Image (cartoon, rainbow, N blue to C red; front, side):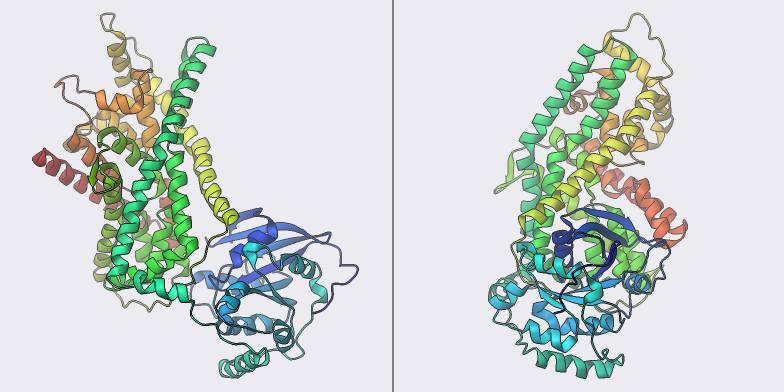
Length: 632
């Protein structure tokens, strides 16, 4: 290996990190940058890029994490980005001066095609071999020194999650100008590259690892057509049960803290509009969403754990059989799975799909996935109206209802996808090739950083979109101010003024359209506000009911609310069922609509998506209401 020169050239160096999916690229990126990454999109496309600043032996550097790819001959949009960045064809993104290839030591032979193509770029290049510990455990071996001689470039073995080899790698990366270069570049012809790959494997004395014994035993169950499906069902049932059972104490604590904060603000500030704005507009509006942070943390903790352990790749394999029947493939499942966190990155993940038709179908059904923004609405209504008692063995009624809401989404998405593939977007599906990683114990630091990133994104959303929406809604619910008749009590006077506010008048105007669903004007205001973001529905109700009764909790307030004419409960079982169903299907997210428009380069498809999902939401809510009325 070439030694690092005594005096590295001045100025920051741009290093491109390139490798196939599941090669350990993300772990290495985090290990080198200390998790300090800047996330953005490549200009003109919505493929995520990450850049991390680091100092290497006193020299500033930028590490660019390129999208995962198996080849520099792209078959999908995200793979095309890699080739374009290397060629300097992406406006506003300077090409890297040196390349760092990341390859899984356990599957080196499959990575050599990409290595050959990258080395043929004829710029400073090094190879980082990950999973070296797993290679040894599985009985495989290779001589990294001989591999370095065969390739003609520096080779560094690392175990990223344990930090082994990272120090040596940082020293190497400080001076790419001194890296050794191959005397003869690998052949460009695919047939000749196959002979070159065989010679490299032979030269480094590589012995292929055995199939991981534990992985093989577990996979006999996990990827079995029947047992794997039953296991998937059991995992999901447990998943949603834990979201309710474990989060409740922390949610109750936050709820109490928000109430205390509102009381403190009222006591500290002079009575009047400003005190009402702080207590009812800001604290009640934002606090009503922040209360669900424990469930959001649990949701992402469990999702990332299942993904990092290696289970989610198996879930994609199991589900691929069902998806193939509707003309989609496993890459669509990966995109749809991402949409359970947020539809925006899920839609962006479709760029890994080589078929434009499959990609468009997946984009159109991705918003049906139950994103984390729906969770506050579900949690509020379930906690307020669904009893906690056990319903089926160890599973409580609340967890089962949440599971049912989550499972309806992918089933509906698959049904819609089947209809689209047989009507508007017909065509043959493409084969799906998926490399199943070995089961691994995830690194605690990486796992915690993933959870924290998602939790912080939720809090940032609460502090921006929801805060702004809460401020606007407070003004719409407060003005114009109408003096109530003198003979009304405090609660009746508040309700009188609320109905005649700007928001109240809009709600009254749309009430005839939503009355068949059992929704009153207050719910209507919440539905309109939730078009900005679904969580705003909760903050809207919090402000509406805080205006009527500042001392009542939101759950207690919606339980007690009655129709002033008939005396019937506003939130009856039929209304709650209709409202939950409406949120399962409706596309209430301006960010998602904008992303669909950007990805399809047209407003035709986001308009279509909004329209068909609104029809599903209204029809489904109407059906749910009448079924519940018939049963109760």
